[in-house]
Image (cartoon, rainbow, N blue to C red; front, side, top):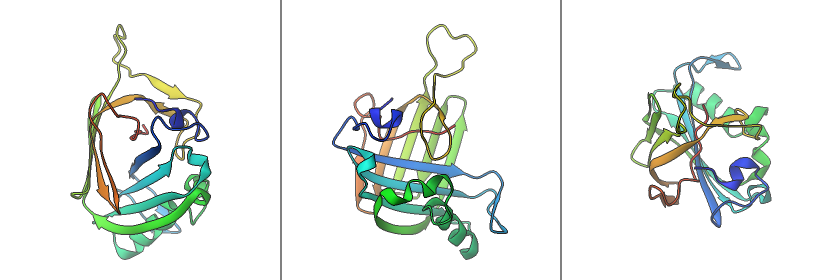
Length: 184
């Protein structure tokens, strides 16, 4: 659901750490003249309780369908080397754990969303639609700092597993859902 670190990085996470996966399904775009349309990338982070303290451990998965040039450009963007929103997070990273190629499967089915990154990561979340909302619109959290948007859909994890770059985590539905945020 919602962890205090989602509200602001300088509040402590619910637990003594935060393990997060940010997945980007790029519809269209280019980086320095290189087309990156229809590619995916996932950043896996392990952070201390208070994210602004730094010392993040970060690993990146690049779509196995990317060419070497596309992969290079994506890694530069999503590790903050080219500035932009991810550049704001780059000073918080204390250890780069590596870059790997993998199949990245992103599925959206109404209020259910799932991501599978190779055999290492498997997530499924369901948007929370409040009682009495006949439009089916999920709850939104707005006005926060996030590397992509300041308006996020609130969702509950139904599956949450990370096993990559030495970061291991398996969430239990209803017990620990704060480690995964879905940007919509």
